[in-house]
Length: 359
Image 1 (cartoon, one colour):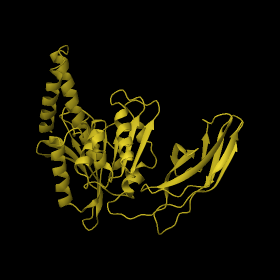
Image 2 (cartoon, rainbow, N blue to C red; image 1 turned 180 degrees about the vertical axis):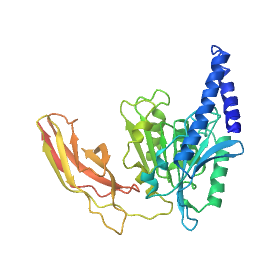
Image 3 (tube, rainbow, N blue to C red; image 1 turned 90 degrees about the vertical axis):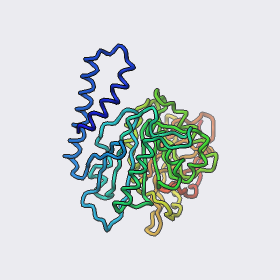
Image 4 (tube, rainbow, N blue to C red; image 1 turned 135 degrees about the vertical axis):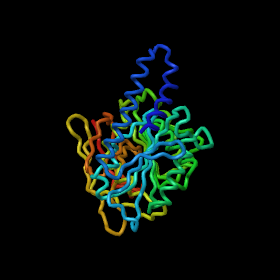
């Protein structure tokens, strides 16, 4: 604990020295409170999760969560979490929870980057940041020590960590099976390096810290380069705290853990029985039947794409079988069809097309 406190305090003193209006006594109190919060968070996690511990490697502090009842004869996935700038508190993240671990036991690696100026790296440079170099060293050492499936290594990050996700996937294109980036971003120039790793990008529409254009542009460039394993979700009216919305994504955990390198899958069956009804308020109500799910292929629907007049207008979760279009134009004949996408980005054939006259 003394080492943790000393390093954290040195980092804070360096940061606080730039704030001339902060009185020394206030700065000392702030540092002591921060050090105490680190101690409390580590203690709480260690008590709640018997297999969680904090370690050090080459000056990098990191948390390691091991699956309960780890069996060296079984193979386990691992998830790497890259936090945001200065957010080095050890937090209780969803991947530790029994609701996930019960059916999908996995390792979770949570390194702490104390140099926010260098961060986890970005795609505007060609080399890893020092923190990422050490993190990858730790990751490789864990793979050597435990029975961790090299085909099921995952990465996700928030803000600074979101930039880190793009960075490590571009610089290590064969290492991870999938990743997701929250309110981060990337240079468009590396799009070709991001074509083959399944990726889900999230951002708030009115993010006031990291501009939404960073996610929009890299997503657009990946698609223009022919990328087929990327999805982009933008939350209307949401600022930088889009991780709160991401935490409510019902299919996120299942999607990520379905990904594995060298896994062969087929396309899902198409939705059937698409029907339309024009409601009194000029809303088009669409309903359909779910695609047939068979045991010999991974055909479960992850989400649907809704098309109006050959343009995609919405994406909705695969558990739904209806959609209301409230943006129709009066005096138009609109044509609709839907496509099912499974957890591996494979698309079904389009459903039949229905048309609606809007008076």
